[in-house]
Image 1 (cartoon, rainbow, N blue to C red):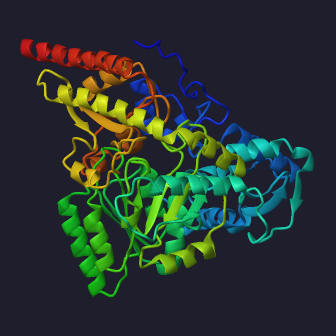
Image 2 (image 1 turned 60 degrees about the horizontal axis):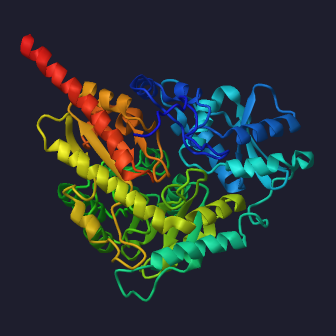
Image 3 (image 1 turned 180 degrees about the horizontal axis):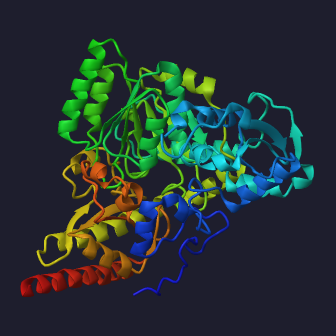
Length: 552
């Protein structure tokens, strides 16, 4: 049994480095508070996932900028490393789509402005009335294109050089966003993509096909925005996805269509939809899918998706963040391959980034290459690239342990689900899900250095809320978002993400009685012991309820 968790609510998970991307959320009562009003809870966090709210170094840099510019005391700002993203923030904030008919209205154009400043690096401040933060802050949370905490830390050390400069286009040299460290990281990714391939395909990605972004969501948002510029048509998401991905497609672009179960029935419905759009002369912009999908790990049939995308002349984009480069080889099936480098690839929960890789074997490669090179502005800071390069050196051995721990937990929880006396009623993981064959089809062959697995993520479901709460509150592990960290994390994903629209989530198989687990690098036996204690607590609640019901 491991030591009792003593981390305070809202604080980073130990060892809690300066740039930690974690936050501990113990206690089911806090889950319910977060579900009811996440914004008010996030404001109490001492540390948070960087898109939840700006890191303290970013806040300090923003305050210094406002002071230097002699901004009004009632004004706030968000910081971006590129003029492109700053302008997108402004356009987002003044858009009529920001009117929710309840509490939010667009920012008036005369109330929001962009200023260029330089300390060590050039960056851009979007300045607006503080009372409009809930409106403008949506752009920080969803696209994830703001400056990083490392960018802020380094520029805070050069406040004596802080100065306003003339707004200039992003064609100006971006010396700390295009460095040998970036090239080294690109080469690292290509090496992993080329390792133990499933095909003998000659045309494979090179470093010139790897594009970096400041977050995983930025890789999704920017790619999506490039495509919107190209087609202004419907985006399809096949299967469920991370909650902010759905929001990005809803808030940016003209039309969005969700096939949220990711089943064979959804495939048939997708084909009908594509036929209808084609018959009306309308082009579907892209089909997106996660492999497997967050949070209950349904794996899409990307062989069929590839065939449909080809037949109806649309782009197929696969996000393999949960599976990971090490475990699966899916690039050759895609037109664009997306991944959040923040998670298992980086592995130490202390830096955020994302990547998009173009497939040179795709018939759409030349068009996509032209599109990316036309719109792409590098925004991954050198200090972040350097940190990820260093952290990813042990990616394969870490992934081996993550795979093993997740599989061990799944075997235990799945066995519990087979026992009618247990409060566990289901476990979700590519190794046991009905859709698992679609995952196994793309697992890389074993080599002397690595045997592919199913990734670090799993999900466990209980019979009712009382047993779920008992498990959650008795599980002696850290609680909160993130995955692929060196420590195991439990997260009440559905309750936290969809607490105000549980009926909507339920139609896609998501229930508040499910707890998402990201396995870490702990000793397997110790980890299993902690889970057994928590499951026994849930079983006890079930038995006590059964006794009470028998007496009544």
